[in-house]
Length: 191
Image (cartoon, rainbow, N blue to C red; front, side):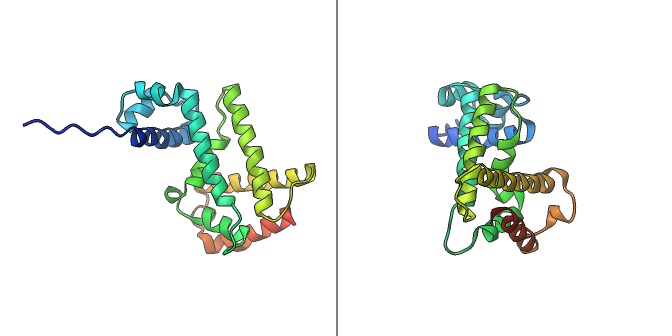
């Protein structure tokens, strides 16, 4: 009796490659991550990376686009909660449940590749601007952008302290624990 062949699903395979690559790039860095490692972990032939993304750089760019989307969704204006409350909820979520936090880690990792670093810098600048608007501050000059970038840097620092260092009590603080300090941080920088 033969084992039935797994049905090919190009969209799912592509997404599996992005999911694996995103985790590897975020935690191991661009230079230390090989396309073979990504393909092996995703359970596919390494040639599929070239087929779907043209190169490791193309796969990284797809990961950056996904990270940007996830981080942006975390910063979008919603009417049911203010920005600081939404941010505290996202930061207080378990790391495994929050693609925004993995996205932030991916966005700050140095790649050693000038083109990749330029892409990342562009994403971070745009993210800072969107975050300022979501926090209720229009970006009309360098001071506004500086404040937004400082807020983004603080958020990245919180993510790193929680997910990489495990420093207590920050590492296990829940959304309710973070609500006041995050609101103070947003108010201090954005008002």
